[in-house]
Image (cartoon, rainbow, N blue to C red; front, side):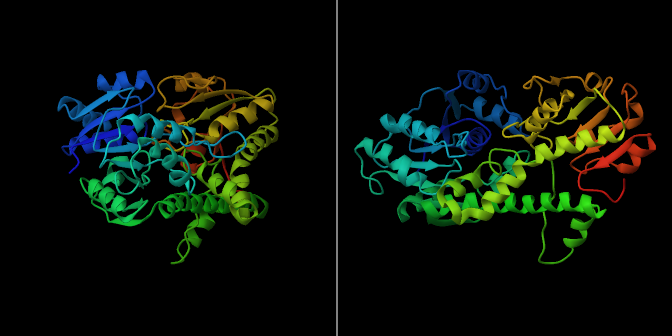
Length: 424
């Protein structure tokens, strides 16, 4: 029976996982290399934004079931939930996983369970974790148990999905998988499916790659639609009425720590075999450039020189504060390379994390020539365009199809939509 868990990595996945276990009666010791993050948790202050996290953190800390520090402690089970980013050359950076595994080695004892939650390339458990864990002197699979159980949640709905989604558990042997399943049954209400570690690693990367390829298809369609005088959003809606079709939506690029990263794991492993995946990644990575060029074209059509662009949205998706791999930053860079002045605003990112950022919507729109919507925050959907009186030119370019065309046009705004040449 698991009485104590040590969770290494207290970010967007590790912290919600830690507080969920703590709120279900298991003592949890959380570990993070950031002293600031540890102190925030100790003081019940959030360093990430997630609905429902504050009250759950308060309960976990007040009950004494959650502690936090920069060093691990002995426990019955260890969960590693650290970043697995890509290097500038698009290869996987697994150093965080290796370091996190190495950090628990002095604390692992016979009978312990070690679980990797980070999304990683297939064979990471085998090639990165096990060489570190053998340094415990304990036999893998009989004296310590190891598995991979990737998170399958989306920011903004983490707790709902953490509890209700099906979960994949891949063990280095059957007993490792069974022990992991038993642990997650503490709170998981979805079905827990058992397999081997490498299959579990591949499954998670496959899921995110499927979405990336589908979005790339939508982005190619959006570019094509502008040559055909079609509204691609309308076309996709009609196509998706087919019972076996589910086309995703286009946008200014793909961000986040999963979809924009994980397909590169397969490209690195597969080479020419992963040709479609590789092309899809390049298609989606090209969208910030396409978005910037489209913005410039709109300004040119209106004969506006020396323009100021007000970018709305820095987060990679709506209603979160997560800027990891956000295409907005690349769009801004591309706009600046075109010689445009840029100021950005995001209501969910409370501290200025980008050089162009302001905390004031009014400051962002002041003397702006075009509003460029890059993130579909609910706040943007509810803005009343009639109240925006400080712009130099009243133009809006919506890359997420989140604004009401009619509302903005009735307020005398010139409205442009990504992938729509039908309604110019």
